[in-house]
Image (tube, rainbow, N blue to C red; front, side, top):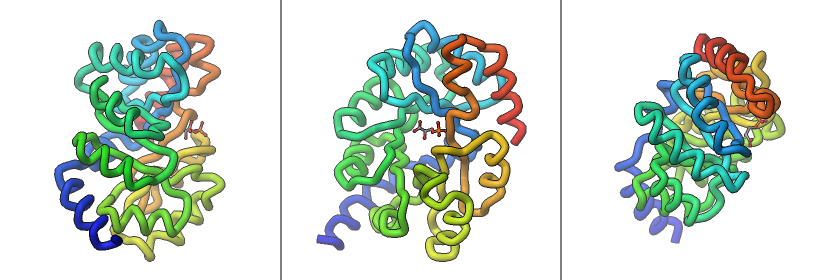
Length: 220
Ligand code: 3PG
């Protein structure tokens, strides 16, 4: 069974690469959209600020509509979805034009579905066993989530020599001030979080403040 899974999934995953997306934008703003009218001005502020990637959480009914609007308006940027928890999410993400999908955990069915849909996919891991599963499924890039309680920077340092092939995108509980030290860690490819576009500023529709934060994040 173990050999079968590895052979089947790894072969398909060769067709997919997430590396370019994560390397080209080392801070990934994770946003939750509650009002579809916020989608374009929010993305505009983030991209004007100099970031090139957005992860939209699938935690509101507006998420996929927001994704479609953003993708249509900003076709050159990498706009993806997070909180992907079932195969239908992957299918809808692909249909809605997502550049990538992110999950809070790792699951073989989802890895296979993303691979079959040729959708760059970032599963989440919290433990060494989950990182090992990702490795055996042929995955190189993993979300480290929730980073703060999964061991934070120290956890990433300890896992680095064990899994030199793996690169992580720590997300969850990371502050703006902590982001640089995560980015300096050798097995970190990018850092995700709401710190770059806080929900409080989205609720206030303070696009100037969000643009200023994006400018600051783009310099990290
Ligand atoms: C999330 O699940 O919303 C993301 O991981 C972002 O978490 P954060 O708000 O703690 O940055």
